[in-house]
Length: 144
Ligand SMILES: [Cu+2]
Image (cartoon, rainbow, N blue to C red):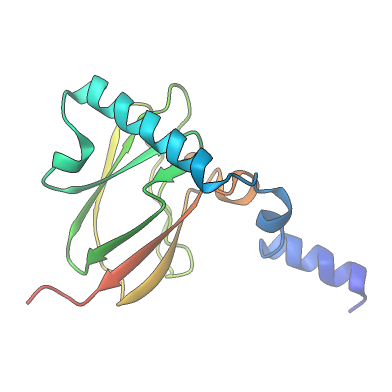
Protein backbone atom coordinates (compact mmCIF):
# COMPACT_ATOMS: atom_id res chain seq x y z
CA UNK A 1 0.00 0.00 0.00
CA UNK A 2 1.37 3.43 -0.87
CA UNK A 3 1.70 5.96 1.98
CA UNK A 4 -1.11 7.99 0.43
CA UNK A 5 -3.43 5.01 0.33
CA UNK A 6 -2.48 4.05 3.87
CA UNK A 7 -3.38 7.55 5.05
CA UNK A 8 -6.72 7.39 3.26
CA UNK A 9 -7.43 3.97 4.74
CA UNK A 10 -6.56 5.22 8.22
CA UNK A 11 -8.85 8.21 7.81
CA UNK A 12 -11.70 6.00 6.64
CA UNK A 13 -11.12 3.69 9.57
CA UNK A 14 -11.42 6.69 11.85
CA UNK A 15 -8.03 6.24 13.41
CA UNK A 16 -6.51 9.51 12.22
CA UNK A 17 -9.44 11.87 11.73
CA UNK A 18 -9.96 12.64 15.45
CA UNK A 19 -6.35 13.61 15.98
CA UNK A 20 -6.43 15.93 12.99
CA UNK A 21 -9.84 17.43 13.45
CA UNK A 22 -10.68 17.39 17.15
CA UNK A 23 -10.60 20.85 18.63
CA UNK A 24 -7.93 21.13 21.27
CA UNK A 25 -9.49 22.34 24.47
CA UNK A 26 -7.41 22.94 27.54
CA UNK A 27 -8.43 21.33 30.83
CA UNK A 28 -9.49 24.77 32.05
CA UNK A 29 -11.73 25.32 29.02
CA UNK A 30 -13.28 21.90 29.53
CA UNK A 31 -13.85 22.60 33.21
CA UNK A 32 -15.53 25.88 32.34
CA UNK A 33 -17.87 24.23 29.83
CA UNK A 34 -18.73 21.48 32.30
CA UNK A 35 -19.41 24.01 35.08
CA UNK A 36 -21.81 25.73 32.70
CA UNK A 37 -23.41 22.37 31.91
CA UNK A 38 -23.94 21.68 35.62
CA UNK A 39 -25.50 25.11 36.10
CA UNK A 40 -27.85 24.46 33.19
CA UNK A 41 -28.80 21.08 34.66
CA UNK A 42 -29.65 22.67 37.99
CA UNK A 43 -31.65 25.39 36.29
CA UNK A 44 -33.62 22.82 34.30
CA UNK A 45 -34.21 20.15 36.93
CA UNK A 46 -33.81 22.02 40.22
CA UNK A 47 -31.25 19.43 41.33
CA UNK A 48 -27.47 19.32 41.45
CA UNK A 49 -26.09 16.66 39.15
CA UNK A 50 -23.88 15.34 41.94
CA UNK A 51 -26.92 14.70 44.13
CA UNK A 52 -28.59 12.35 41.66
CA UNK A 53 -28.91 8.79 42.95
CA UNK A 54 -27.93 7.47 39.52
CA UNK A 55 -24.56 8.42 38.02
CA UNK A 56 -25.45 11.25 35.65
CA UNK A 57 -23.31 12.41 32.75
CA UNK A 58 -24.13 15.64 30.98
CA UNK A 59 -23.72 16.29 27.26
CA UNK A 60 -22.94 19.88 26.36
CA UNK A 61 -21.03 21.66 23.60
CA UNK A 62 -19.67 18.39 22.26
CA UNK A 63 -18.33 17.23 25.60
CA UNK A 64 -19.25 14.52 28.03
CA UNK A 65 -19.20 15.99 31.54
CA UNK A 66 -17.36 14.46 33.23
CA UNK A 67 -15.21 13.18 30.40
CA UNK A 68 -13.61 10.38 32.44
CA UNK A 69 -15.46 8.53 35.15
CA UNK A 70 -15.62 5.26 37.03
CA UNK A 71 -18.55 2.88 37.33
CA UNK A 72 -19.16 -0.62 38.54
CA UNK A 73 -20.39 -3.35 36.22
CA UNK A 74 -24.17 -3.52 36.57
CA UNK A 75 -24.50 0.15 37.60
CA UNK A 76 -27.06 2.34 35.94
CA UNK A 77 -25.78 5.27 33.91
CA UNK A 78 -27.86 8.25 32.99
CA UNK A 79 -26.97 10.76 30.28
CA UNK A 80 -28.76 14.10 30.21
CA UNK A 81 -28.46 16.55 27.33
CA UNK A 82 -28.25 20.18 28.50
CA UNK A 83 -27.48 21.54 25.02
CA UNK A 84 -29.76 24.05 23.37
CA UNK A 85 -30.20 22.44 19.96
CA UNK A 86 -27.84 19.55 19.47
CA UNK A 87 -28.62 15.86 19.90
CA UNK A 88 -26.04 13.33 21.04
CA UNK A 89 -25.67 9.59 21.36
CA UNK A 90 -23.75 7.10 23.47
CA UNK A 91 -21.63 4.53 21.71
CA UNK A 92 -19.20 2.02 23.20
CA UNK A 93 -18.01 1.20 19.72
CA UNK A 94 -14.73 -0.51 20.56
CA UNK A 95 -16.61 -2.76 23.00
CA UNK A 96 -18.85 -3.86 20.12
CA UNK A 97 -22.01 -2.18 21.43
CA UNK A 98 -24.60 -0.58 19.16
CA UNK A 99 -24.96 3.18 19.14
CA UNK A 100 -27.83 4.52 21.26
CA UNK A 101 -30.66 6.54 19.81
CA UNK A 102 -30.01 10.27 19.71
CA UNK A 103 -31.18 12.15 22.75
CA UNK A 104 -32.24 15.73 22.30
CA UNK A 105 -32.03 18.80 24.57
CA UNK A 106 -33.50 18.05 28.00
CA UNK A 107 -33.81 14.37 27.15
CA UNK A 108 -32.27 11.49 29.04
CA UNK A 109 -30.69 8.26 27.86
CA UNK A 110 -30.30 5.51 30.44
CA UNK A 111 -28.33 2.33 30.22
CA UNK A 112 -26.88 -0.34 32.47
CA UNK A 113 -23.15 -0.91 32.39
CA UNK A 114 -22.53 -4.30 30.80
CA UNK A 115 -18.90 -3.90 29.86
CA UNK A 116 -15.90 -5.90 31.05
CA UNK A 117 -13.62 -4.45 33.71
CA UNK A 118 -11.16 -1.88 32.45
CA UNK A 119 -11.18 1.31 30.40
CA UNK A 120 -13.69 1.82 27.62
CA UNK A 121 -13.86 4.60 25.10
CA UNK A 122 -17.20 6.37 25.06
CA UNK A 123 -18.11 8.00 21.76
CA UNK A 124 -20.88 10.31 20.69
CA UNK A 125 -21.88 8.98 17.25
CA UNK A 126 -22.31 12.31 15.45
CA UNK A 127 -19.50 14.21 17.19
CA UNK A 128 -16.60 11.96 18.09
CA UNK A 129 -14.73 12.06 14.79
CA UNK A 130 -14.84 15.77 13.99
CA UNK A 131 -15.54 17.36 17.35
CA UNK A 132 -13.62 14.99 19.56
CA UNK A 133 -16.63 14.13 21.72
CA UNK A 134 -14.98 11.15 23.37
CA UNK A 135 -15.05 10.08 27.00
CA UNK A 136 -13.55 7.25 28.97
CA UNK A 137 -15.38 4.96 31.34
CA UNK A 138 -13.42 2.84 33.77
CA UNK A 139 -15.40 -0.21 34.79
CA UNK A 140 -14.58 -1.76 38.14
CA UNK A 141 -15.50 -5.23 39.29
CA UNK A 142 -19.11 -6.35 39.41
CA UNK A 143 -21.22 -5.68 42.47
CA UNK A 144 -21.09 -8.59 44.90
CU1 LIG B 1 -22.54 14.61 20.52
